[in-house]
Length: 165
Image (tube, rainbow, N blue to C red; front, side, top):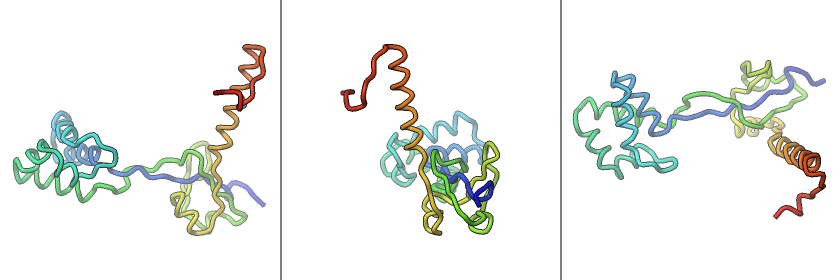
């Protein structure tokens, strides 16, 4: 009933964030690595900052953008590309399982170790009604169990999780 085409790992997409998209666009515009790094360094170090926010907050970014029409075009191009998927990778623990052949339900691609990979994200596989399992929790429980076993072997003492401060 279940087999190769009934289980797949779930894809996740890395997107073009502010610093990375500036580096990529600068490279396409023919700028040197040091120039691309200069653009990237003009973005404040804030989590999930957008290029428009960086422009508002950073005088260095404003100076770079306003220096020339080519720099303005570079910035506008980067703003248009920001947030788009840059690469696909495998979700750390997400797996879908189906009694129906997944080829009939979701786009698939070869993944690592001959395991299929959905081309849908975690939210998308849920929306189409596939059974999604998160095995990270189980993996963590195995790590904890292995740690307690190793502790007993090395120190010849048994401890319980609720004894650990």
